[in-house]
Image (cartoon, rainbow, N blue to C red; front, side, top):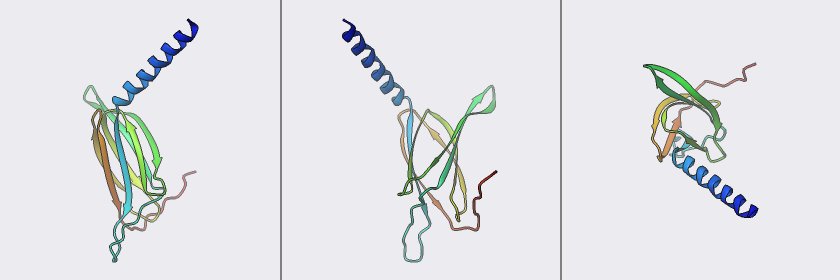
Amino acid sequence: MKRCSSLCVAIIFLLAIAAAAQDRGRVTITVQTKADASGVVGQVNGAKIMVVHWTMSQMHSTMLQDQVVATDAEGKCNLNLPPGVYDLFISANGLEPTAMKIQLEKGDNTPLTVTLKSGSMHLRPVN
């Protein structure tokens, strides 16, 4: 009987996780550099992406959550986020930063490619 109860609790827990995952959307971000003269596009390993989530509350914008992620060796990262409006700030050393706004709906699976241009901006650690 105790084993059956544990199994039922585990199944309910797994179903709750699956239901919560469906309430989110997924954004796959690829950060690359502009093609050079030979047409080669470079992937940006370690680009920083700051994600700011906004919600409207009584006609005023309110920041709900924010997070920072980094791209992998292929210049990619995946975000699983609740539906909403997000500001994305993308930066990498030696490249001009960029910003954009996206709206994510429940169940979305959105690919997003961001191309950063060469620039003189260099990021320094903040003390």
